[in-house]
Image 1 (cartoon, rainbow, N blue to C red):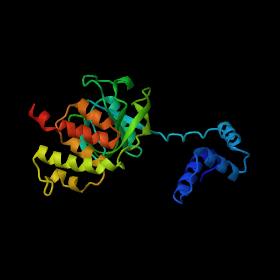
Image 2 (image 1 turned 90 degrees about the vertical axis):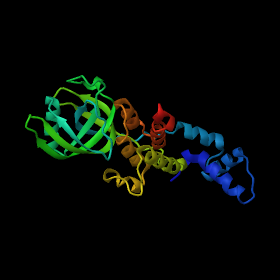
Image 3 (image 1 turned 180 degrees about the horizontal axis):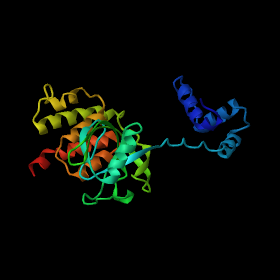
Image 4 (image 1 turned 120 degrees about the vertical axis):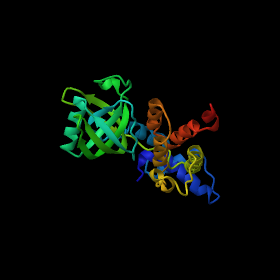
Length: 262
């Protein structure tokens, strides 16, 4: 609901409503009318009151805390189900902490594959929170997890003074999916991928059965990215593209015919 701080928007609404009834007002005249409606002497007085009003504080970002498992050469995407093997002590501790709680772990790719004990500075800032579906102890002492990616998350800070790394995470907003161009780019992406992978989307391979039925552009882009031959850096760039249209265009560029032929 609008109040006096929305006076300019109210004036614009008034001008538009009167214009539709063939009544023309200048911007200044509409401002003065709104001031009168609000019981203020004139626009200058109302403007001073608006400027003196305390600014509305931005809503606090709701953060969550999850144990961290660094990934050497894998980028996990939301919706992706993947086996992950863990033997490093901090990764094992992260699994134990997750299994004692809601079974969610923050998976984030490390910048250098060779780092055996990466710190927060050695990890990318954006990763994926995933749920552990199954956990198996392997004969060599490693742990095999089957995980499902749930959602992107951005690191606020990482604490490394415990048995495992623990991250405070902020949600990543979904942008661009409602833009008018998103549907057209999505269709182009599906057609390009069908040609690129030489598949028939009317009867795709078992692993891609759900692809033609996805309606969310972001989920479609994430699924396609999983099946492309990409470097870790390329996958991370796609993961970090929070604008859905930008993400789809990045994947389209990767599948461009001239790039395939190179």
